[in-house]
Image (cartoon, rainbow, N blue to C red; front, side, top):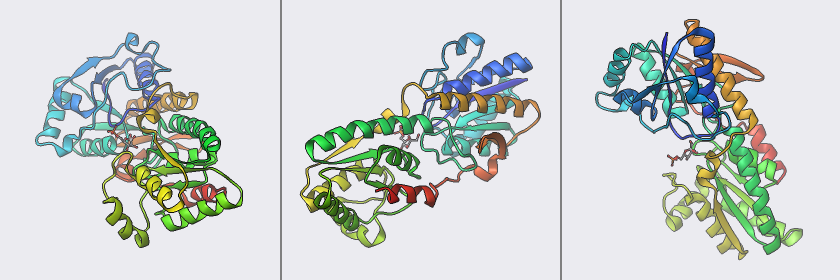
Length: 341
Ligand code: F6P
């Protein structure tokens, strides 16, 4: 069988472990041929490809990024995009695709599957917001990096008696902010799931500094938004909160805390540091498990499914049920973050 393989959307640690697992298992167990597409769906549409051998995956298990390259490209949104995908697959006699990606790539995968191509998807995103799976490849490493950053910023906060605002990734969901916030002992964690009230935050910080502390850590997910009752005032003062721009909400929150409290306040926007570098063992293991499961799924006739982690088990879920949906942080986890503030 000839299988196409691609990684799409933002890169993350653990992708190469998944690629390695797909190639090793497909070649070793089933004698399939694996064709790697460069730069996600863009490579499928343009026929930019490379046959994958064991040499291509040697020594990649502990490396960050994706050896296949990636792009934010959605064939179903391009004029003639789906036709171009079909033309490449026919020319290369590819019978099935394994697509490793986050919400955008999986949405494209479901559209390509609807158009008659056999597709198995693997969820990855540091944001952990892909529906239908407990974990996505890359998330645990991102939480680890973000927690380490909070730990390091803590020392400056304490030494200088400052409020330190740390903006973390997470447009649709605040998984990294909540988990790194809990692990790093943040005083305030702001997420897209729970619109925030700047009056309450600044009142709380003033009370905390008066009562027993001389510093505070405020973690903000980049998709955090003010509650409706405060948004008008904010929008007038700082501009629109609608469009998510890296650093924007962190800067606004820090500026308002400084103005209202008079506390010395600084902001750190962690950005793409969260997506880079060596994957934790847990992401290498998850990538390996998903890679093997995807090859098994294709080889046993499955299509339009996504590998998923349910508790300790890797299972298959229907792609149509998860593509295009987000997975918000559950309230009980958000409650832990606020209970410990
Ligand atoms: O991959 C998801 C993500 O990391 C988001 O959290 C973030 O907003 C976005 O990617 C940044 O994307 P880009 O690298 O294209 O700026």
